[in-house]
Image (cartoon, rainbow, N blue to C red; front, side, top):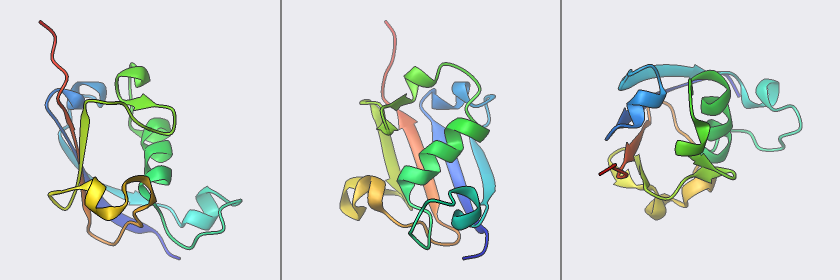
Length: 108
């Protein structure tokens, strides 16, 4: 599978972990080149989170990730729809998808 272009958005304070950039288009390499052991043909949210951690996340990964998923309090939308309706980590990304991460965690 060739490279995949998607849009990634961060909001609700999550953008502070990513150089304060709220929106960006990213080009993900062919999944078999990025994850040679991967038997799947395409990218899933699970692989996207690994890629984000390695390529975009600038500080305090514990505020964004917990285990192999986002931490509780981070709302994830796939094309403006709750990721729970798409299978969460197992959703296979499509060209031009918009994946949005919104932090609902606020200090007091």
